[in-house]
Image (cartoon, rainbow, N blue to C red; front, side, top):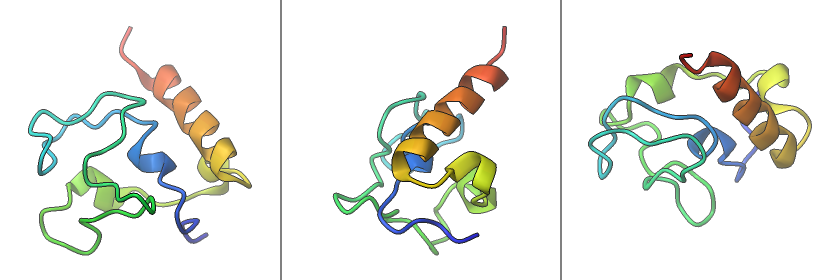
Length: 85
């Protein structure tokens, strides 16, 4: 499965604990990454400063669903389910 162009859900819904250029402490869940463009594209895609966690994330039907709204909802649910107690 390929990323849905202009979706950006994976740059909004999940928390990222590693540093991101412009966000040295990462980002909390539900907060738009500072590197997400107005067109919902990653400004760091293909660049060495892109965080490892972002490079390793691969789109999957269970995560992305059939729409951007599905992806936002599914990722938020996965974030909640995987959060420390």
